[in-house]
Amino acid sequence: MLRTAGDIVSEFSLSRCVRCGACDNVCPSGRNGGIHPDEVIYALIDADALSDAKDIRADVWKCLMCHRCSMDCPEGIDVTGAVRSLRYMDAVSGNSPKRFRAASETLVREGRAFPVNDIVDRKRAELGLEELSYDTDSVNELRKIMSATGFRYE
Ligand code: SF4
Ligand code: SF4
Image 1 (cartoon, rainbow, N blue to C red):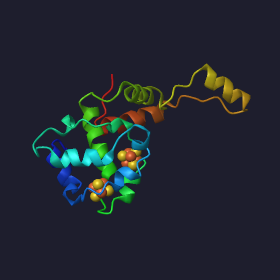
Image 2 (cartoon, rainbow, N blue to C red; image 1 turned 30 degrees about the horizontal axis):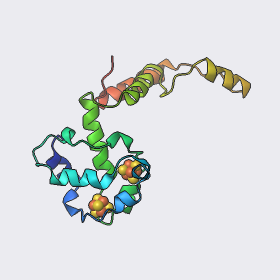
Image 3 (cartoon, rainbow, N blue to C red; image 1 turned 90 degrees about the horizontal axis):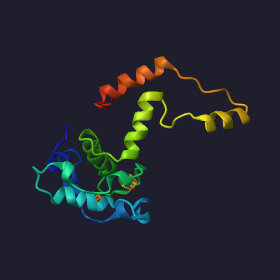
Image 4 (tube, rainbow, N blue to C red; image 1 turned 45 degrees about the vertical axis):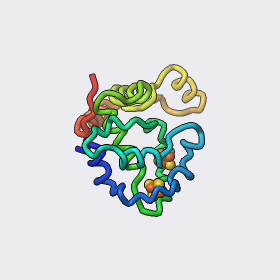
């Protein structure tokens, strides 16, 4: 598992970065007060190689995972992958934002990221759609898959 800044620099070949800022220019999040992917990459490169990557503080949870930064990097760096690695480290150490944890817990509990409540039931009925059912087998499969990826839940 990736743990240090040096691990991520090596895994994603970040030393190829020419600091052109192209990833930031196309980032829809950064334009709206969110993450600046170039700053994340520079912080990783400039960090002590042995420092814990989860200590690289960046707005990684504001990333939309749209992959535009990776698509436009002239050096072919998977910028999104590096951001995802930092999110993963936050998640395994229990530091992901509350709203993300809530969505994950709903997913584990109900097999859906959003709870089905009376409003959903009523809207579906109005649209002539079938009532949503709880598929125990599918939810159990999902829990197995999530456990295999290291996701922990109560
Ligand atoms: S994947 Fe994230 S960092 Fe990259 S362009 Fe999209 S929002 Fe920005
Ligand atoms: S687009 Fe690629 S080379 Fe340019 S700053 Fe971003 S990561 Fe570095």
